[in-house]
Length: 85
Image (cartoon, rainbow, N blue to C red):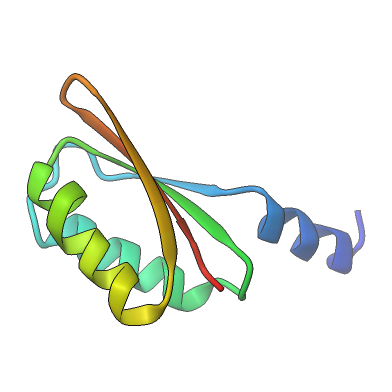
């Protein structure tokens, strides 16, 4: 796979950031740092069991930076997918 193909694959395929077991603000900090490193068009799937992270801090991060996101909940697990424009 060429460097261009690898970059395109990373842009299309979401990265998974598993922050289960971490309390706020650590999931927020890790998400922010990862998104800052990724190129435009990238997605990050965040797994968290911290409700404040899922319903407050990550949505605020997205709003401030123009990112779009979706979220769903399965029991104690929240899954957020953030798209960097």
